[in-house]
Image (cartoon, rainbow, N blue to C red; front, top):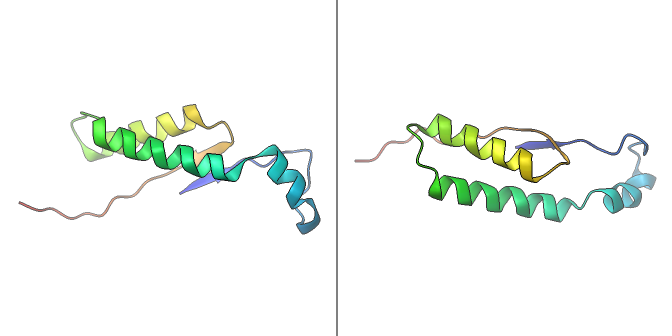
Length: 80
């Protein structure tokens, strides 16, 4: 889950949505987060899943300026 920082100069109203979309490309943000998540999860060699989640969040924040905060939660399932 992530939260975006909306443009401070545009009030959040139904009528202003086209202006907000012109400032923030929501599809690019979603694509970047998805690609970053898959990349880091597949290639990170950290000691724990918590470290992998942290590394993934850090990389997503670096790559996508509109993201204000991000969090991950993975299922707690173990298979042998």
